[in-house]
Structures are given as structure tokens and as C-alpha cells.
Length: 204
Image (cartoon, rainbow, N blue to C red; front, side, top):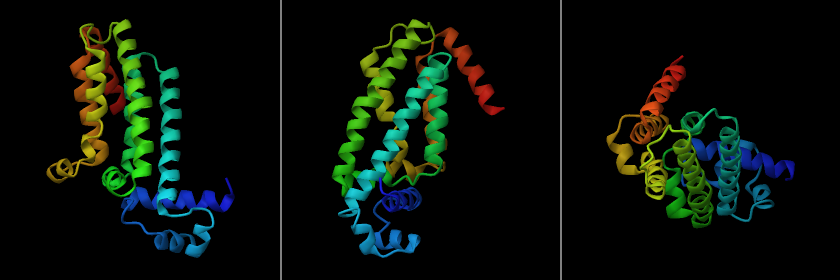
């Protein structure tokens, strides 16, 4: 990628994460960078293309980190805690309106996210459930397809406007609480003890 285009994408990413997609204009990005809006349009045909590139970059990084976490985790529960750390770091700097903005105003970007969600994320959750059952850390009576879909959809609950209105918690805090709730619902007796140990290690 051209260095200027890379800078535009990086600065747009920072603004989108802080203020949301809809609230940030091309003028805002140009002003932040100290360049003309015309320069941005030399590399991106419109704002939606820029949004697509930013979202695609976030997804690519997310997929790489998930794959790395899976390979370096001690067991299925440890893999989830590594994923929780990744989400906490990502959500700590993310405006909660991003998903809603994407769905309502940037359909091409939402298609990219939707494909990532229903293919990569769904499959990695299913593989984690299968791994946990084999390792005797998750209940053996789990309906993997249903539980995986529940986990996938529940990860997005903190982004719902109604949820945000009624909960006094950050996106990262809500995500972590829901992740723990999910985990306690699927673990075996052995997995319960390991989960508690991971929570204690997380607090250190």
C-alpha cells in the first residue's frame, strides 16, 4: 500500500474508533492529517471504500490474533481467556456505535464484517467447543451448533444501543462479563476449577 494511503487509513481508523463511523467526515480526516480532502480521494473513491479498508484491516488483525491464541493456548479455556484479553484491548478503544453505523450506513463494510462473523468466528468458536469437550473441560452434552451460535450473537450484545443505554459499563467490561457468564455455563467440574484459576491469574 502507498505510504500516504496507509497513513490515511491509519488516521481514519483512529478517528472511527474514537467517534464512530458516521460522525467522522472526510473533512475531519483531512484536517487531522493536515492534507486536502482531494488528496484522500486520490486513494479512496469515497468514504465507504475507506470504511471497508479500515474494517477489513481490523478483521485481518483479529483473525491473525485468534489463530495465534489458538496455537499458543494451553487448553480450550485458556484460549477463551486469551480471546477475552484481545477483545478487551480492542473494545477499550472502540466506540460502541461502530456496528450500528456499519449496518445502517455502510452496507459494503457490513458485508465484510458479516462474512467474518458467520464464517471465521463461528468456526473458531465451534472448534474451541469441540476442543474443550475432548479435553474434558466442557460438558459433553453441549449442542455445539446451538451453543456456538449463541456465543457468536451474545458477543455483539454490548453493541446494541438499548443495552448501552441501560448499562453503566464500558464496552470492554460488558464483553468480559458476558464471556465469563458464557464460560461458566459450558464448563465441566474440571473446567470450572480451571476457569477460576484463570480468573485469579487475570487479576494478578
